[in-house]
Image 1 (cartoon, rainbow, N blue to C red):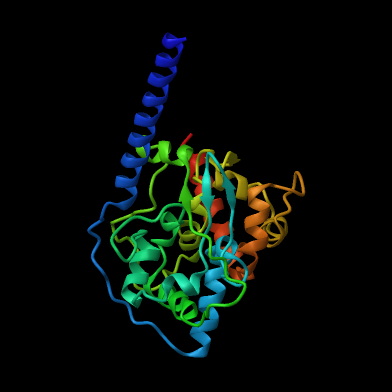
Image 2: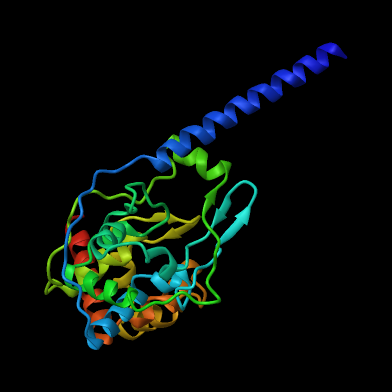
Length: 279
């Protein structure tokens, strides 16, 4: 019995050491500072800019992730994964300056210099200054409310293992790639600032356990009416429910204008043609 007790004691000690390494190491990664300088862009305050900022915030998924009224959501809560809870926006950004918000949205760096996780900065970093300024103008109109979620994200052992081993990366993108004004090639712009977060142009990608098809040939296979229906309703040609894509369309992409949808498909068809010519 003494031997069994010693073995069990040794196993418990090993588990405790491993957990200390897991939590201590991942917490260091989570909390370390990122030296991304602040950048200033002028924030408009007129009603038209604020309204457009709200539309762009919908397209960029702010409402899809943080709730239709930006009141915050709890995506999941379990022992292994922890709590994944996009916060109530108004409460979270109250202490941020406009320049700090630019860095947060575009580069994934919080006010204290630490990293965001599970934030679509890979797409948001492509937002032109003008468009990002309008989104921030809209964000400043949000007020805390009684239905705001007070939950905070707290990673469990599974995501912490991914953080420690590099399988679960932060949302930090230190480089600045955005243009000052929205470029004339609107289709390419919206691909990079929205679709590229999930889809590659020429090969499949895996997002949240689902397969995101190569976007250029997929878009080229749709006629204009079917592609618009896809982005507005999430209903595809082959089946009515496309999983994650259906949700994104209903929460976000439906706010694209007809001209923006047409420009996006034109760009993607052009990329599909280049792929075919290169074979």
